[in-house]
Length: 384
Length: 194
Image 1: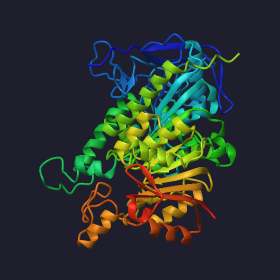
Image 2: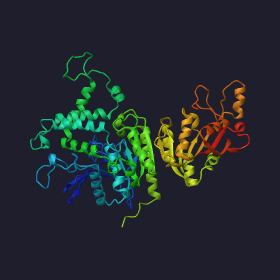
Image 3: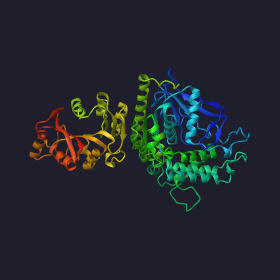
């Protein structure tokens, strides 16, 4: 049984300038915290979320035992990221459908629901919004920023945008930017959504419908890319759903994998917002810290001051180990402090959310060292 | 090869404050020693999960990579010293790795089991492959796929245009400079590219 988590929300009236040139004001950020901030405010860890996750990182909500946070296996009292030692902050990004201001909320400029007019968000914008939340929480410098996948990109972005505000960056199953193949998958998912007759150009809320067909397909595509071929074969193989005979139909669900994907798609379309899916996949596409330096990641990472821990998984073909090694190389070129674990796990991209003794061992040891550091080296003095 | 005296003998070759890359760093004890005692910085390369974990636990920078995949991730002359301590004998491409060591490091230190150590010679004379404390495996299941001698390495070093700065044998943690090819279980070479 995990501990009780309590969602909180903070209002930010002042405008946040965005990378696109637009800005957003009067927004809310949903967040949760676990553990206690210590006296010198040096033990805070920010957890950045991935595509379809939120601020609910660990613990369960009161009276809802099945509502564990998405990284509850790693974060909590006595766990690898030990909330008895750390003050852990989970924050929901702008544009999400899980509590922070997003496309389904009212645009203060028009008094109408944002819908498709919600500004395009970038990883950098999210990081800046998170920094504002930390200001309010009184956290000048983070012990670490931790994130997997898209969360790892935010952690990386933190080291470039606010290098003085963090001591460690833990980047799991991530990449310095998406490959063309990654963007292609995102594009197919987005086309599935925007071509759904119920999408109405993103203003489907007014029509009181949800482009569920598009969301289902988007999720099915995503799901395929998060797993490995081996795991899919092991879980489903070529098993048929009912009996042993082929039905010779092209419409029915026949193979177990079809049934599984449809189930996952249905579930997702019940709770996820279509505009949010478009926004977040776009933020993924856009993330490319080396772009400003003509593609030279080494040059971009020259400003980073954090100590790095990177983890990748051998069967992850969406964010392959080769992509993590690109980050490692750029850090080595800059003589940064970095460790890198390449975990030989069978689960594909999803491995970063699962229990693997080697993965958890590395994470636990790394965070234990960060905790030990707190006792010996207090946080750097607040900048004047 | 983690006895204190062996560790010290090898560490003594590494200039204080060096930036070190340790290829096949094991549990990171040598790097930890170099950091603590000689003010060095650096990284270890290790493939084995348990060793990677041991390094992280020690606070030694470790990169989990397979040396057989090459070292393209490292730029030329980007380290003061590159170490290959008990690593060479496990590598399919030992010569390439030696050249890579010289490319990446301004200096290199290589240590490996000396197959010409007299107990090994005796065993061969008796018609059997040696099984000793230093080479504890049977011939059919040994991870030591490249067995060479102190003298063999000298030849390989010259072939690859390496200038040997120092070389000696190590036996039970003691430096052996007299007849190292016969009297030492471990060969140690300190070199730079000519």
